[in-house]
Length: 295
Length: 257
Image 1 (cartoon, chains in turn blue, orange):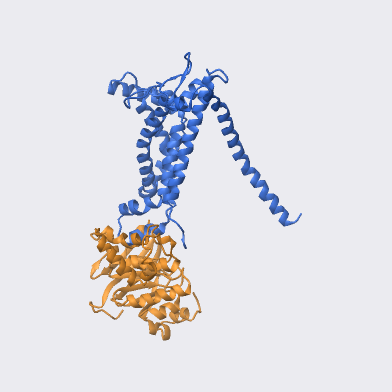
Image 2 (cartoon, one colour):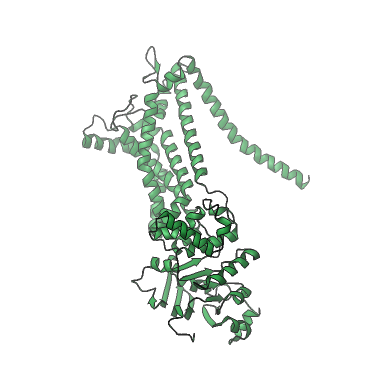
């Protein structure tokens, strides 16, 4: 066998290997759509997405997932509002400001946070945060949007912080030196040079953190309260899409309307995460400076 | 070192020792740098010439474990006095680095980065300043129509002249250059050398170079360093034709280094 033939074989082996993961992903998507789409023989797309009532076991059933979508979105947005500043600022502190000893301790703690099983965090939300919320704000239940958002934020912080940190480390030292040499202070260098240079990476971190929050199942199942109704305040209970799917799939008869509705909910969730990723991609392209010249 | 007239000297080091942790990088350096002259610092790699350059605008402060002994007097004031703000020093002593390092911003924003820090916010002022600085760095004609474009799209030589313009926009008294042409092609190098010749009418320039022909071409005075010590500091012509110290001659003629 000639060297050239070997090269061709190696090339093709790698191509096939990379194809496998794409193929598996493709099959999952096909399966998701095959099980979800039959729902629309019973319900119109509009009634499904914007329907206000989720009573899948009633007779006749109604499959409106708008409250579920709103539940997912509001929990994701609120948790991002908490997690993004925390995660990004923690990353800035760790990569640019902290003395080496503190840096190591902080990194270890954040990694530990990332390793906590979501069910443990959910348990914490149920036993510690829920009673506290209930007493402090005099609520009927502490299992609500705020509780779920706080726990999801705790889960998203390590993702946001570690990816942002990588992006910040990747900012060339030359930029920092140039900034200091022009008489910039550390704070000015961080806000005007380091963070803007790392912005594409930081946006990716934020979006991935949000994707983590929107797809998270166990926490919202345990602490969001499970009410499939449009919330009126952030202290109301909600039923985000993953919680609904996880809670009901075991009870839904195989290939019943309910079963198809849950898969269709899965499709919506999938499209939303896909949208998040496309946005992340778009933002990171937009902030990327064109051309690299000699650098 | 014989020149002590205050009106011609702008910055000088007095018995400076410098350490990176336990390693002593500079030993007892006393040097006067003259106003509106080009001073070249030469010597083999690791001799401490870049370290000395970075002492003059306190860039070594950024290195953990670095320590300075002695005084660096800038117009009579010791810049290592605890009262002195290094940010203030760096605004008056500009620096150009070995590798062109424009910010990943537009050409205009690169030039106006420094002035904006000091509070110049008026758009017309900034535009005028950008034009003057780019003209001084002989880059204006090449970039005047693309000021909004990313500085990263320029060639290496253009980037380096942009970095010089960026430093000039701060209207510094001294311009430190750390091997500014070592990453450039010969044509870009020639342009930068011409530029230095022009700039010395207004600025005091201290340049570290590995290229001895370059030192001979552009500098008025040359200091030769070896293993952290200043071996000889003299007029460039003397250093390159008839040096006082044998070691200098050996280095310049290529017998070591």
